Image 1 (cartoon, rainbow, N blue to C red):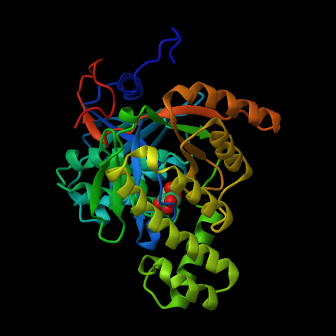
Image 2: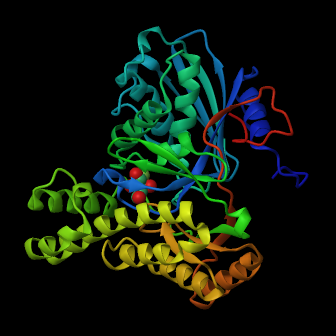
Image 3: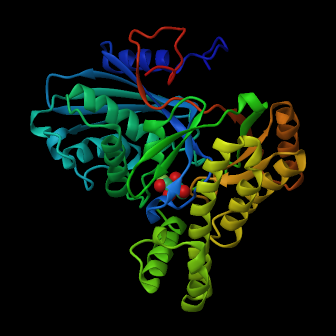
Amino acid sequence: PSASGRSVPLAEQAGTGFARRYGHAPTSLWSAPGRVNLIGEHTDYNDGFVLPFAIDRHTVLAAGPREDRRIRVSTVFGDGTIETVEAAIDELSPETVSGWSAYPLGVVWAAGRHGADLAAATGLDLFLVSDIPIGAGLSSSAAIESVVAIALDEAWGLGFDRATLARIGRLAENEAVGAPTGIMDQSAVLLGRADSAVLLDCRSLDTTIVPLGLGDEQLTIVVTDTRVQHAHATGGYAARRASCERGAAVLGVPMLRDLTVDDLGRAERELDDETFRRVRHIVTENARVLAVAARLHDSGAGSIGDLLDASHASMRDDFEISVPELDLSVEVARRVGAVGSRMTGGGFGGASIALIRRDLVGALRAAQENAFAAAGLRAPIVFEVTPSAGAARLPFPPRDDVAPGSTG
Ligand code: GAF
C-alpha cells in the first residue's frame, strides 16, 4: 500500500520502481501468477498427474534493453528495501548465482541450455515486484522464473512454446537454486486459464483445461497461509523424492506412475513400511487427481470434497509432509462446513486450501484466527483466491482497467 493508503497496482509499482532505480523508463511489462494446487501432490516428479490453477496474485516484471551484455535485476522486499544484482550474461552459471537472484539469473542461464543463443543476446534491466506471499507454497519462485522466461523469450526472439519455457524455469530451479522440484508449478503459472484448473500429465506434458465452475455453485477457494515457512532446497522434499525413487527401483518400474492401486498388495510385501507408505500416497494420489478431473466434468466442484479430504489424510499419514498447523487449518475448515480441505504445495509448512460456500468465508476466517490463537500459534493469513489466467505481457504504459493476468 502507498502512503495514501491506496493500494498501488503492481504494474505501476514495477514501472515507477524501474524508472527510479535505473534512471530511464522500462519498455515492457510482464506478469506471472502464483498457483494453488487443487490436488496431486509430489506426483509431478513421479511422472504422474497434477491439477493446479493459477491465482490472482502476481509477480510483475518491468524490462528494458541495455547497450552492453549485462543483466541487472532488482527486487523489492516486504519492508520496502530494494536490492539490485548485476551480472555479465557470459559469466552466468549455477555456480555464479546465489540468493534470490538465482531465480531470475538462473532462467537466463537455463534458456541458454535450451538452445537460446546467449552470445547474440543484448543486455537487459529488470525490476520485479510481487504480491505472492513467499514460502507459503503458492509458487512465488515459479512466478519469478516464468515472468523472466516470457520476457526473455520476446526480448531475444527465442520463439519457445510454453512447455519449453516451463522446462527452462524448472531447470533454473533444479540447477541454479538447487531445489529438486518437478514441472508442476511452472506449468500452472504459464498455462493457467481463468476459472479453470490445468490437468497435466507430467510424463507426456499433455495438458487439459478443466473448467471449475465455482461461481455457478456459489463456491470459492480459501487459502490459509499458516506462516510456517518451507524451503525445498533443503531436507524433507529431497528425502521424499529419494523414497519414491527407491520404491520404483525395488518394484522394478521406471517411475511410480507405472503402478496402479492393484499393485499395492505386492508393494506392501516387497517394501519396508515407510517406503510402502510413500509409494501408496503417490499411487492413490494419481488416482484421486484423475477422479477429481472426471467429477469436475461430470458433476461439478461440489462433488470433489471427499477426494480433497482423502488427499490430505494421505499426505499427513503416508507421505508425512504435513505439520500440525496445516492439520489444524484443515480440521477447522471442515468444522465450518467446507466441501473439502487439504494442504497444498510441497508441504513442511505453507498453506492449506478449503473449497467452501461463498457465504461461509467470513466464518472460516474468524474460526481459523480463533483456533490458531487458542493453540498459541501465530495468526494465519486467510484469503480467497480466484482461478486466473497464466503469465502474459501487460499493456505498456499500464492501463488502470487491466489487472495483471487478465490479458493474453
Ligand atoms: C513443490 C514443487 F515445486 C513441485 O514441483 C511439486 O513437487 C510440489 O512441491 C508438490 O506437489 O511445489
